[in-house]
Image (cartoon, rainbow, N blue to C red; front, side, top):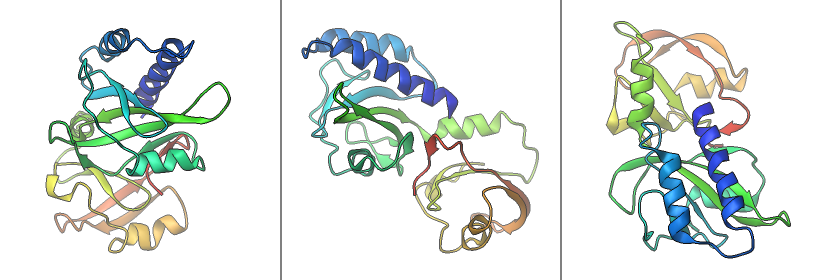
Length: 212
């Protein structure tokens, strides 16, 4: 999460610099975003959208596709302005290339403090699973990255068919444990593979909002 947060802050700072004076050089913006991305294994793409939800610039294409995000979850969350910090949206299939992505975003404001769009970083769920895999979990163990509404963002061992599904109405973790505390150790039966495990649960930092 910290790596993604730093990347988003860097994109926001770049946007501040490039939009000074009200005129944006899109070729320069593309080149600088491309350099900032640098082939990172963490992120699939970097960019930003305007206050109407239109994709303005992205590290993936010199001429960005005409994509409007005004009706998407992340845009509505940031436009409302009630939730500061990062937002991890539900996994979606990209309108551009069809890949399933987790869009991590942050509200962007202009110099007058008005909503001016979003800063967006797209992450493949496989990034999280490869990170979990590096932890050397051992046999019969698993790791889940979940939103507070129970939606699965990633799992190791991978279970692609479960990404985007919610455990909120079926798992004691959400029906009982998280109602009492954000952290703890519990005995739980996985709805994914049916195995009973002793699980440690920890909440994400307050700056990162994994859903609602």
